[in-house]
Structure formats: structure tokens, C-alpha cells
Image 1 (tube, helix red, strand yellow):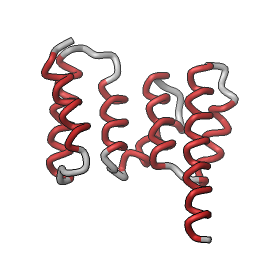
Image 2: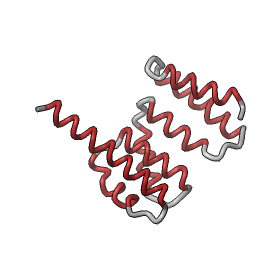
Image 3: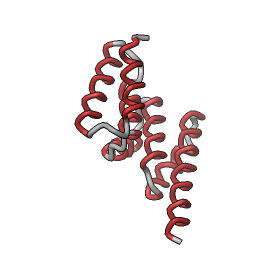
Length: 129
């Protein structure tokens, strides 16, 4: 694999908290460009998860849209991971649907996302008590 792609992803992870929105979007665009140039299978799913980990709130909206239709399994797995990071209890219907999927990868991703969401919900309740 091309070292520029890996180094950009690692650099983005290191700097995630200190970048401005404009800087993180520019770096995401470079990563996405590198992934397409290298013919990586999942440039969109990589970009989606990186955007979510940077706190890009549009990522959860995109994830919900992706999960509303059938499509690439890797991309839907990434979308489920984004729900785990940024989703809330309003996503329970989507998660239940994927928890019943015939594909074990989607089921596991949905269960993991649900656990994260409910853990966040429980922590929020404890903090407000």
C-alpha cells in the first residue's frame, strides 16, 4: 500500500483534536483522493468513519441515508460504526433491522453500534443524576 495514504490517515488521527473543520476536510479530501488513486475498495467507508471520528456531524446523517437502502456491505458496516459513534436512541429501528440481517458482518456491526449508543445513553443519565 502507498505510504502517503497511510501516513495521511495516521497524521489525521494524531491531529484530530487540533484541526479546524476546514483543515480536517482538506485532509479528508486528500485521503479520499489517495484511496481512489490506489483503487482501494472502500474509500467512501474510510472517509465516512474518519469524518465521524473527527466529530463531523454530517457523517451521522450520511450514515442514516446509507443504511436506509441496500448497498455495499463494507459501506453499510462503516455507516453502522458511525451510528455507534454519533447516533442516538432514535436510531434503534435501523439498528434492530440490521441486527436481524442475514449477513453476520452487518449483524455484528449493528450490535456493536447499539451497545455504544446505549452505553452513551446510560452515561448521560448517570451524569445528570
